[in-house]
Image (cartoon, rainbow, N blue to C red):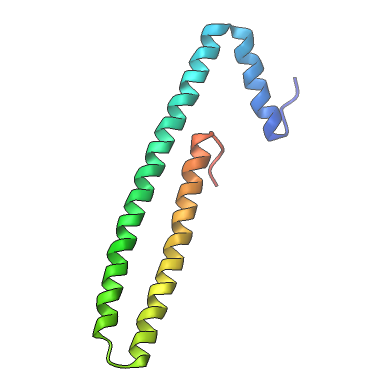
Length: 110
């Protein structure tokens, strides 16, 4: 049989092979998939909780910095740093969650 070329072909072939080996193997594969999903969801939940806790901490720090400001330039500087840091962190978090999701479904990492 030629080497599969698409993601769908790569996924169908192992499923066909599992079906040919009997129901026990199929059940084991389903159990393994379920375990991977539950593990991945747990990792994602922890990652999100950690991220939210850190963002709240940084939000509070920024509020304290804003209360100490004496000029409009200081306020603008604090706000600018806050927004830039938040954008960077949200982008990094989205990448982490995408990686966790890809690992859950067994997609190759890049």
